Length: 279
Image 1 (cartoon, rainbow, N blue to C red):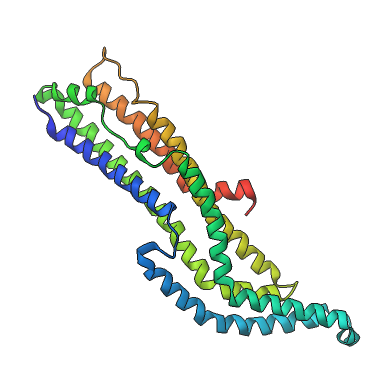
Image 2 (tube, rainbow, N blue to C red):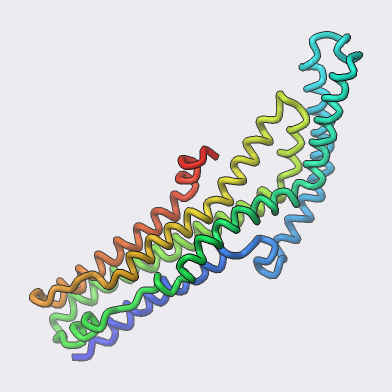
């Protein structure tokens, strides 16, 4: 009996996964400036320019707070070295607000270079593609109608799991991309805190967190490399001395397990980066 519905159902699920993998690869190797032809980036640049005025206001406020907190007495204001140090901090913080967006893009470019180098080591996502083995397809097509009913249930569950995992993975990568836009838009507010030693922890935390988001791409690429090693090692072994239902169940269980490894590493990329680099 030709159980093409069962085979087609699984192949559509695998095709959905492969499409999401290609989309993931494109997002990881793309810069925020070129994503969607730069439309979102241009909007964030506009917001950044608007928030620079607020950043300059906070700069003056933080400067005044730091000035009076760090001075032990009014005589400190008469010391040239004290005034020079405060002036240098003010100028550096103002420069950070004015050119902060360019600075953030340079950081992203460095981190994305690491991502590109790791991605280039496997050449693409072809090795991570999932295809059904011919043995499974032939075994399913040879099953009688009554014996194919359990296969419908198994493949339906497998299809649902694979589709859900594919969209969870791509949503996680999209979430990282959108976080980069948020950092770019709100950077003037955080960078204004560098004007004073009592408020600079805000800017330091902002930059550390931003670097962590950029480095998530490297962790996700490494997770793809691990998954590719699983996928390229061949299909899960299929025992021919068991029923077709057991063969399909075993194949789907091991395939979904491998997908869970990749999705789990992708979902926890931020925590992995934090544990590795402390950012």
